[in-house]
Structures are given as structure tokens and as C-alpha cells.
Length: 180
Ligand SMILES: Cc1cc2nc3c(=O)[nH]c(=O)nc-3n(C[C@H](O)[C@H](O)[C@H](O)COP(=O)(O)O)c2cc1C
Image (spheres, protein in one colour):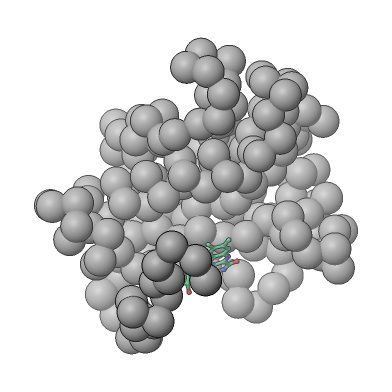
């Protein structure tokens, strides 16, 4: 698939077929994350991404918490939990920026491989959901130095899912030249 096509056709997929995904495919998806831009010098220590591959049914059920609109995560054959190791580069604080770039690579690669995926929040910016974030950290047994960034649900798309049309803002409305 052409990159431009993958970028334009990828959508968040929340309904999956009951079909497993091989380790090889999961590795390909995570491999694409390794090529994302990161802050700092071109050293391995600046590549602070960490991934937990969740296939265990009980853990997936726990990760759904008790939000009605989040129950779809239980139906995903695989959830990749994306984290950042804060101790890899103590100078670098923008964990969310570099992991988000890695995540976009993963979402596009999943799409390119014929899979559907969805970015699921871990309440980073939601003070009122602090307790739920703590629950996720506990379920995943994350050490203190590991920042939880996102859950990525992945599976073969169920064609019965009704995907709402997405209205895009007009490009000319967004572009400013030289100054605002
Ligand atoms: C930071 C972030 C958090 C998100 N959290 C959730 C979530 O918790 N649950 C969910 O169903 N979708 C979540 N999404 C997916 C968005 O709802 C989705 O990307 C958006 O509606 C645009 O649709 P598209 O991905 O199909 O283009 C999240 C996306 C981002 C970037």
C-alpha cells in the first residue's frame, strides 16, 4: 500500500474478528515504532519506547475498566501497551511526543498489514481520572520509572462495524503564511 493511501484510509477500528494475530505480525508493528523520530542524540539511550504485548483474556478484561465506551478493548486479540522509560534519558521529558510518533507508525503499519487498531487513552491529562490511571498501572505492574502512554488495540477488522464518516477541516482554513 502506498504511504499516502495508508495515511488517508486508516481509521480507528473498535470491532474485531475472533482471529488471533501471529507474533511475527506483532513484531512487525512494533518494529515500525523503532524508526520514529526521538529527541536527543542518535543514541540507543534516547529510544525510550517500551511495549507490553497483552494477549491474556483476564488482563484485557481488567484494562477495559468500567467505562461503557471502552469495553471494546476486551474484544481485541492483542493490546499493545505503549510506555516510556523515564530513566533512559533523564534530560528528556517529552515522553508523550516521541511515543506518539512511534504510535502513529504502529497504527499505519497495522493498517498496511490489513489489521485494524485504535489508540485508547490512559488518562494522562485527565486529573479526574487519576484513580483509573493508577488502576491501569497496577494491573500492568509498571515500575515507577515507566510512564504509561497508551493502549493500542489491534485485530482483524470486523466488517460489520459501522464506521462513522469523518469530516475533515478544509486545508485552506488551517494554513497561515509567514505569520498568523
Ligand atoms: C490521544 C488519543 C486518545 C484516544 N483515546 C481513545 C479512547 O480512549 N477510546 C477510543 O475509542 N478512541 C480513542 N482515540 C481514537 C480517536 O477517537 C480517533 O482517533 C478519532 O475519533 C479520529 O478518528 P480516526 O482515528 O478514525 O481517524 C484516541 C485518540 C487519541 C489520539
